[in-house]
Image (cartoon, rainbow, N blue to C red; front, side, top):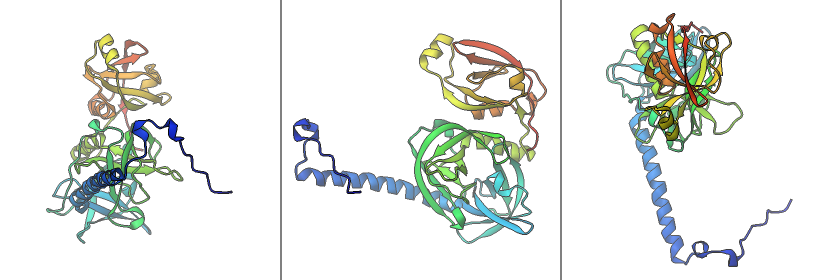
Length: 340
């Protein structure tokens, strides 16, 4: 097959804004392009310099088997976040930091449903990073991943936030809600590492890729991670009410807010129901929008998970739901989400 011919727009169809630039214009445009690229590079480099020292390689052993993933410290006294699937059933865990130090790590707790685990290492001065606010994310903003893909420690990739509010099946079958999609390249070994914004804040925990796909990677949103980590610190596990919906964050249009006399523009869109679950028994449907639970606003998936705490287990709970153009009230009784 011959070379593909170049398409040239006839000159008489060019308007003034499309005319061939003068000899001076390309040089000016090139300078501007370099400035933009330099700013982007400096942003990524600055984030890596700040966060890189807090990202560790997680070495795991389970009998005769071994493996590795990524993690990052969120406190100077040695609290480390990683994925549940990285450390599940591990008999020995070691955290290797970029400065050459390594520490034995013990499991404080894990939540397979969100694929988040919390480790403790005996250290008092490790570099650490802050959890950011994922609720303010916008599609298209910079996303930077740091981790240890295929054993290559401290590897950096960058891209953008591709989509928000995804639901993703965990390695143990249940749905992980409030998932960020990114095209920042991830590979086996990135699991448990941070996804960061340009302010060096953690916006998600890298958790999964789709084998064979390119540019489709996923991270558990920081707002959900914060809720899970809080319970792991308090209880060693997340005692959670279960209603059996898969949901995604949704923003309601202003016209709907005015018509329905609502003040909060964020809610949860039901995209799936488990058969026989409390939600199914209460006749919730795919397409419903969850507004309140026990009189408290549901402003997103992370908010719903926080509201479904241990106190809701076995207790009839009233929920306001937007179905079509009507707000209806349903009563459901959460059960305890058992171990996976």
